[in-house]
Every structure is written in C-alpha cells, then in structure tokens.
Length: 189
Image (cartoon, rainbow, N blue to C red; front, top):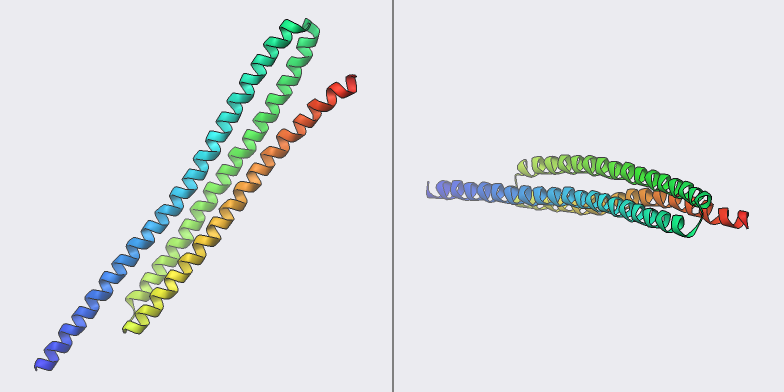
C-alpha cells in the first residue's frame, strides 16, 4: 500500500513537473513570438522614419534650390529648374510609395510568419502534453526548441530579404531620376 501511494505521488510529481515545463515552454514561445512581432514593428518604424526624413530633406533642398535659383538666374531658367525640382519630388514620392509598399509586404510577411510559428508552438505543446515518459518529453521539447531556432533564423532571413527588395526598388527610382537630372544639363551644353 505504501508503495502504491509512493508511486502515485511520484506520478503526480512527474505530471506536475511536466505541466510546469509545458508552462515555461509556453511562456518562452510567447516571448519569442512577441520578440518577432516587435522586430517586425521596429523594421516598419525604421522604414517609415527613413521615408519621412528623406522626404523632408528633399523638400527642404528643393525649396532652397528654387529660392537660390530664382535669385541667381532669370525667371525662365528658374522655371526650368522648378520643373526639374518637380520631377525630382515626383521621383521621391514614387520611391516613398515603393518603400511604403515594401513596409506593407514586410508587415504582412511578419504576421504570416508569426502565425506559422504560433501554430508550430501549439502543435509542439500538444505533443508535450501527450508525453508519457521523461525521455519522450525531452525529445519533444528538444524538437520544439530546434524548430523554433530554425524558424527564427528563416524568418529573420526572409524579412531581411523583403526589406532589401523594398529598399532596392526605392533606390532604383531615385537613381533613375538623378541620372535624368544629370543628363539634362549635359544635353543643354
């Protein structure tokens, strides 16, 4: 009878230990998920700040250039310069649009990746809950940890790729306009 009671106590302890481990794993996974979402939000905020700063800088430069040109040049030349500034601002707006589209793509991808991670973690928790022995529990926990590390690396790589694509697209737009602007005075000469 004493052995049965001791076996029951051991089983209860093991169940309690497993439940505590599942709880810790759940909290760790939730923290990882939060970190992924916060990382994506940071990328979005950084891109938005970059777009805002770039637009403000270009607008300020355009305004000063136009003011100086009107003072230095005649009215006709100033109007030509104003046209160039207008085209440059259009290019900045297009690159900003490309960046915003990129931010949306990154945000959408981050959300989808977070959903996949959550599902993986839920599946892992279910697997942990079904474990009947300590060795099964350790194997399931190791598998879940490995999957989380792999997903973290793959998710980071994917979000970085999307960010680079968005930045490249915006850079191409601005570069094309800069090249047009540079070629215009060369043609006039």
